[in-house]
Length: 360
View 1: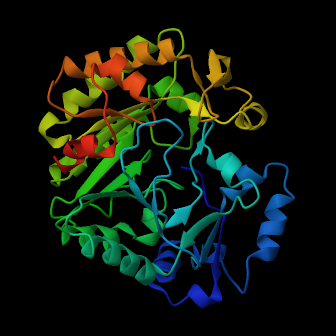
View 2 (view 1 turned 90 degrees about the vertical axis):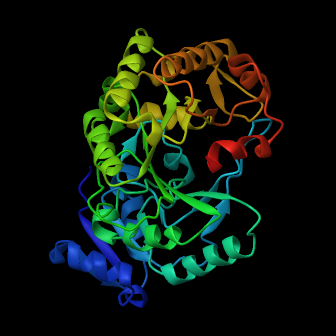
């Protein structure tokens, strides 16, 4: 995990529980109370690597907008009807393929939002007014779900909240092993702890400052021992010479350590990014090889591997998983109905045909 060098807490947030948790957990010499973040942001933007510099500076502020957003999906791709809680933006983990490098290019500070009461109120309003619907809600759209948890204690707030909801499940998606606050929590079986996984060679070259594969699996074992369901996301799958053997080892490691009955779903998604990301990746990750693959612009205006390559990769990963367990639901993240049909032999009509996966 990258080292957060400075923490800036806006004075209007200092009495909030999140700010207090951070102040009590962090080195007090690195904490600064400020009126506004303008000067801090201006300094970051003037650095040689604003994105990298932003990952070392954390701002605690209020969210002025909505916390809860429905996954926007992408053109002509099947969506899994996911909802996000944006409790933070940006991430101290530095992945070469991360869209945040482009999305937050003008505001690269790490941000944690302090007004959690407003967030919980918004969540309760959605869930309670829609009792006939089942919600799968994650916190990992604009940041890693657990990367800040050792500072914020956010999981101690959000996990018990979901434990009382009959028609919703929380997914905490991470590339860390920061699970210390999850141990001993009363989660009521309504929180799924999920890990994004890749071969160690990809973690070493493309997922800087993240936990190793072994650390991620070890953390998953502890969470399983504490009664949590455990999900895995092979996303992005990155193709290179020898990728099949490396991904086979990842899957073997998972099933040697995790009881399949504890796995409610596994997702697959191949590498994809906007054309604008190519220059960012080339500049910030000169050692990366992910731009060497055969990629083409697709209908959603993202660069992806050629469809036959993606279909072949999905089929092989699905087969590897099915060799260990044939009952775990597997879904594709942001892929077309045609790809679904070529991989699974069936085509989901839409989000309703995926509900059985997540209600399981």
